[in-house]
Length: 55
Image (cartoon, rainbow, N blue to C red; front, side, top):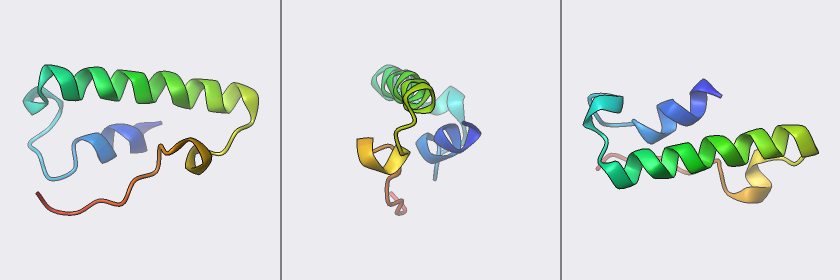
């Protein structure tokens, strides 16, 4: 699920630069991804795959 971290830190200097809210959102996304894996749900179906653009 490294791609989720890459997605969350896209166009930043890394995890250390995420705000508290952004870090909590990443943690929630990781929990949701684990649920998807265990239930066989596609990541796209629950909105985990997002279009990225420069900030």
